[in-house]
Image (cartoon, rainbow, N blue to C red; front, side):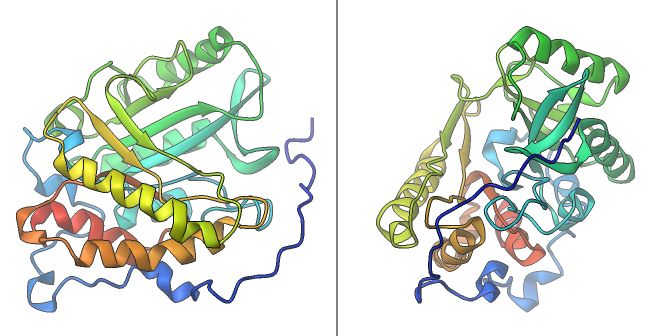
Length: 303
C-alpha cells in the first residue's frame, strides 16, 4: 500500500511583501549574556526544576505536527527531526497517527512522514534514558485513517504494552516529579487513556485555518496573545493551556505563517517581566529552532 498519498494541489498565491525573513524564526530575544550561564541546556532544563511543580504551571516549548518534514510547502511544518527537537528543549510533541495494518504510520494528511509511532517512542525512550530528569508531553491523534475509536485504541494498547513503563496515561495533570523519564499522553481520540484532548483539564487555542498573511495581524496573533495572557492569569494546576502559534490556509503556507508569527512572539516575550516567572503553558510552533525554544523555557528560571 502506498503510504505517501498524492500531492495536494493549491491555488498559486504570491508571497506577500509583508512576509518577514526566515531569520525571524529564531525568536531573537536572547538571554542576557551575564545570566546565560544560569540557564540549563535544552537537553536538561526540566531536570533543574522542582519535583512539586505541575506540568500546567510551566512554560513548555512544543512543535505542531512534530514529524511533518515531507510533502512539500503546504504540508511541511518542521525541519528538525525528533531527536534534534528534544535536544533543543522541545517537550511537547504533536504526533499524528494513521492506523494501517495494525500499526501507526505518522502522517500529515495523505503524506507519510517516513517514520512510525514505534520509531517515535524509541527516540523518546532513548532521549529520556540519557536525560532522566526530563519528560515528554505527547498528543496522540488519528490522522488520515478512519478506523473506529475502539480499533485505534486497541492498536495504541499494543504500543503501551510493548513500551511498558514509558507511557504515563492517567486522566489528570501530574507534578513533574511523577513523570520524569516518562511520556505523558494527551489523548486526542475517544477511548485512548491519558489526559483527554480538549477536555475539562485543557484550554486550547488552535485557530489554524488562516487564509492569508493579512489575517495574521488581524486574527491569529490577537487570538494567540490573548490565550497566552489567559495562561499567565490562570492559577489552576489542573488546567493545561496549549497555545498553537501555527496556521495555514488557501493562500498561506505554514512557513509563511511561522515567519510572520515569530517576531510577534519575540516582542511578546520581550515585554514580559521574566523575573516574575510568568507561565505561558504549552506553546507549539512550526519550523522550530533552538533559538525559538530557549526564550520560552528560560521563563521557568526567571530569565
